[in-house]
Image (cartoon, rainbow, N blue to C red; front, side, top):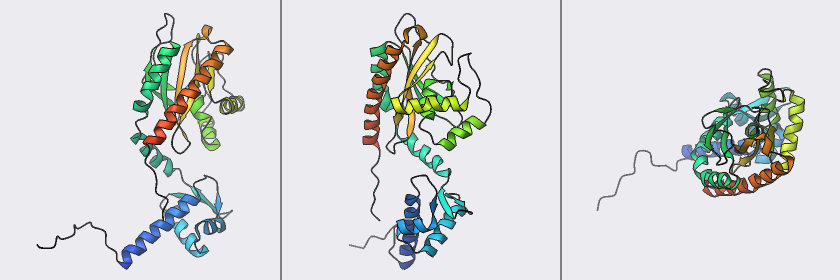
Length: 275
């Protein structure tokens, strides 16, 4: 029987191929060493990767040149660039968040009889991608396909609270935070206090800040990497959102969304840590 020929793109084990693999593996090790998000000195990069300082410098400089890392020349430190957000969002889209969350949204809507929304983060605000209208005679309308401001909606705050400070500062600096109603918080310092409370409690609230007569409670969904990748809100007439009811809904959300987070982790591909 004649020997089958290898396809043109079959991997070859040549010195050149091994050198390429080694370079990629070393570059990956450097990126892993910066995965915490903070600035890392060249000395620490070399120590964390086991690379010689000169090798680490040459490789991380190449990563800077192609836009995968940023350099603080004065401090001699490096960190991941925002390009990784693009890659991260592409991976997140593979995890069909809406499909995984939908059964939980239906249960929340049936249990509370209030309108339930699923929102995803955008560059300058959140986008509501799924909305189930409540069954009570007095209810808020569904908002599917609409945008939710980060500063004045509960789902926006639930997402914004878990974004890096630099991202929040960008949101504050793009322009004045608009007042949707007379109750809207438009001062960044005051909003930071609200977001800190959100991180402490696990849920965010909004009472007639986005629309008079309505109120909302929201909590984040965390992805396999621990980032807030979506938020779910329960909305209804403000007359029903007394403090006790807000706390009840907040705790209900946190418990339900923890189940979604667990399911998403199970659906996520498991990375290989071998080098």
